[in-house]
Length: 251
Image (cartoon, rainbow, N blue to C red):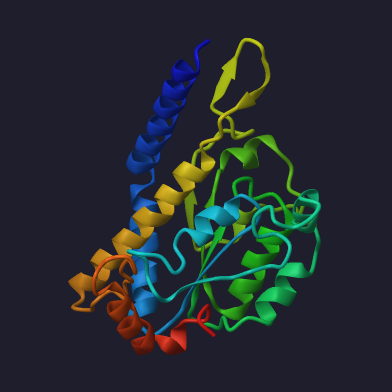
């Protein structure tokens, strides 16, 4: 099978997944966007968290051109990406009880803020505990996960629950269990995951909805511009100064 044919098959699969979440998750996206707009309008702060490759979609909405300046990355040391050595340690830490509560308790997050938690499977202790701790703190929790995992896997948190069970709003990425779109003769394992593409799209759709909600309320969304266009740095300096009490990645 030619490489170009496999590439085309992946694009087709990813586009099909994107179309599905566009059509089937529209209500959840609208609710999540409205919740974020409510928080921004009320002077609250926004946080995003993801472990392992789920952290990529969280990072994608933090301190970037076209993004909300007030969206902050909630970092759990050792589980953001694959930079920890050995890489398997990050996966092991996702199953450690108590880690999420310690991190959230040491963060600037408080009641009334929003926390977006991204976990493809939603089965590990870390995202479940993070959602529980956030709601106990009085935060609103938006979960981005694949509900299919709740039907075909067992939870790893001692409560016997998944991330989706502790969220105010759930966005279902509808990624199949195993997160691989392609199979081919001569290749023993399924390959070409689409979860990052789909999850990032859900996140950006949610933030776009929030921007529109704010405009309808007569509030300018706290958006950043590209620092590589003329006037971008000056724009960003103004926005970050205006919202400095809600931005934590600059300190």
